[in-house]
Length: 475
Image: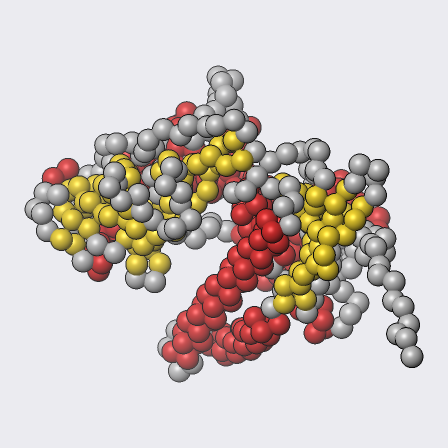
């Protein structure tokens, strides 16, 4: 952590995250300026060492028994496990060592244990859902009866509030496994297999002996990150590790008074990206006593519709202005074009795979690799487009609330909405909406201004909404 955070009256602490890029660095031992390519290489060597240890640790404990032990939250002596994943794994005795002949310090091992512990903890919820779906397997997986829906929800902890599309997704995943193996999977660990290990460095698990970050006293938009990186892919001694200084240009969204935390470094698109976590003070959102609110409704062509309302002392609700609409027809059209392109590429890749079979020398192997690369490229474009759309829609909504001076946003809860019965094209368009991302981004941005975001059940919201009276035009 860099600095101290002081709170005023009516303020609360909020932790957020911003992204930055590490473009160059300076090796403190030699004074050499490291180019972006050299920095990527050295960070990649460290990330590869960590990923290898993470893979070994996950491969050893990727089973139901070990995950349940971690999820129980207590060790063999009945003591509560620490919240830090690496400390919890050490308390349980889940040790990991560097490859033979490679020298790393204990902080690098911490990063590996932290990453492995987070992966295991994230598997707990998926394991419970999958176990419930398998325990209440329906006679026809394509269509459950009302009784079968009741059974599967009872078999899943908290299943009565779980969106049905989550259960359907797990069911389709199990059906695919049955087609390939002729039987149901035993658990989620057999259904999903060992997860892919990303190349990343969780510096939050380290202390000052591995990494430090300080904000510049002269330029609040700049921070100095110092971390130890290897000078070769297989460091033999501690002398093969040197300190590297990296200057980070902070995004404009990071307040000047924010307290910085050690980031997570990721290698993407040939660059070192840093997920910058920071803590700052924000106005405390009220839970009661709201008199002006912004109501937000979802649509298909008009993605969002919003209108401000005032609650009078006599209990009457007054509409403020005519409201507004967030239209994203062009972005949604591009989104659907990319979806159709992705479907065609997947169909072509599946056909190539059937023709290739197990023959690694088949003449279609090269074309199949090209198609797989194009699929990843299209998927990245779709993800970036969805992220941009989610941020734009959330920003528009919060700006509407700020302009109307509202203290709360009421958002229609459509988590359990299913797209069905409206034709293949319309069903797909509804299911492709990025409502979940928009809701998350909206809460993130509203917290900056002390605005509460409340989700309301979708049932009857359109039926009982106030409707304008249309009068006949004079002759």
